[in-house]
Image 1 (cartoon, rainbow, N blue to C red):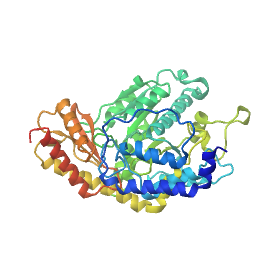
Image 2 (image 1 turned 120 degrees about the horizontal axis):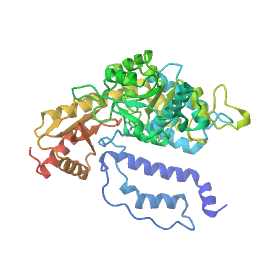
Image 3 (image 1 turned 180 degrees about the horizontal axis):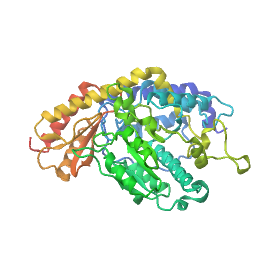
Length: 468
Ligand SMILES: *Cc1c(COP(=O)(O)O)cnc(C)c1O
């Protein structure tokens, strides 16, 4: 054994303790860590020859790289939709690495059974029934891709071809309809050989909405002349967190032949709040569902879950059986369901967090985040110089400069806020107007943080002499 390995093996508990000490110190200071680091990272060094041992690696990391890591796990990082990591989920994540199980299948370990238990819990939290099976994947983009891959196989079934055997070309042009799809949908269509250009935007409801106009969708489906299609419904859009009427869309199946995929990456968490659960009513009618977990469940990257009612088609797409064994039957191993064969047990952090905080604790995070988004919304509404671009429907505040919200001025405001280190917001364009988004999805965020965010916005406007 290499001497560095020998010595690390002998000192393993001490090394884990040292890593734990650094993590504890960094997490204790997370509240004051700059939300983002905008300065230049160090350049790459030569590959180490002799090896410094784990202690040396830890010291070098702490000195050279750790200072440049962002506070994205902290309470005032409001960019994109970025969850943090609950204490229990961090512990679960560490143990995932310590046990280093390959969750590809059931052979020789209970790890896959733990993933099944966790998927079952998530299914229940989101109001899905027994007909939905699920599996962990790395993020909502992959969850959407897997859902649409199953949809593609279903189209083949309807048209009498096997896409998994003959390829996507056997389908001819595919119809994909959606109101306000996330950018990952077009990426998935590219990966799947359906093509980015096959996504057809259906009109959304009037009156500053991002939810699809179901009558327009009905008409668009009627115009397909009976050809089966894929409908991507959106439960939680990123700008204004609008929700398609899932029940009304599902009811269109009585007249039209389509696969219903729901991108509920973070919107599915509305189900955890009794007041907001009606937003996702009808989710169970979906043929496939995407839910991210590293966002609003607040588990570390990378984790999402994908659900489907047609596991048989999923197996046709993803199975890894030798041809002479045929398709897997019964309760198939995960390697027959997901893009990966070998897989990290990424269910364990979610399992830990659900055991630690339960339905109620995770519901409290959702409700608190929504209340805080409303509070920031109210402050912006009453502030001079800023205005909301949409009502705060759930956990995102979409706003812009009151006067002259040009791209240049909104970018300058965004930069000034980021430079303050106090908070981080991401720019967007809503209905043609350059804007900023503040997305609340971190378990640590409190009212005091909303105040600091509002103060940071005011200070940034003052520094840049935006009209107040
Ligand atoms: C974040 C998000 C995605 C993509 O999620 P990743 O985890 O970044 O892959 C897809 N859809 C919606 C609605 C999202 O908010």
